[in-house]
Length: 288
Figure 1 (cartoon, rainbow, N blue to C red):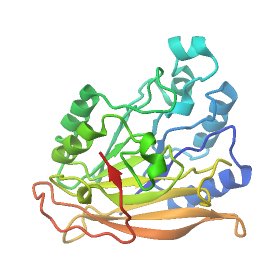
Figure 2: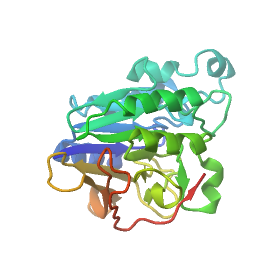
Figure 3: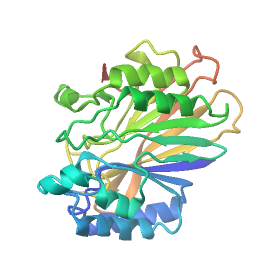
């Protein structure tokens, strides 16, 4: 069993200290093989906020990380930095590569930088990025769970969030599905949900949108507590390929992250676009 922990939108600079400690305890107990941080690591891309993020990830004690920037990780008020060095803070802490890739026997996880310094909050994926990700997906092994990570979502559960959807998703989602992706992870809207994209569009294989809420920030939304996702996948399990996506919410009384909802995600075999799919608790999406 391989475990991926998704942390999104921690917004260091607005983090809650008790929630930070609880998340570190959760990571210590569960021992994920990978931590994915799907953007908006900081609130305003300030040095002190990136320093706080660095202290946090250092306490994950050697757990592999895949981190992509969000729109909040580009300076907003420092116009000079936004134009000339928009990712300087992110690169100082997380390295020069804004589109990292993690690969193991069980996982292929591809980060996509969907931020643009010329945009304020909107995200975009270019045709070049779509093709580059597709080529990498086509190199996956049959056993690997194939995950693409963007910051902005490719599907929404509320009409209010349609303006937050990723520009270019109309091309990206079908192309990545054809190339073999199983999951598209995101954040940005501070709402956790899991959606079957193949039920909203004519896709050649099952693809699931997995969205995370804000992990650590005071900027919670919709009455939902701070939350993270744990994705469990067993490449050696008999039968059809599947994974379990568990949402963990922070509980004030216990001062811990506790499991609140599971989704079973069933995938096609690599060459079988018509495989059976199933979901527990998935909602309806607005896509394309």
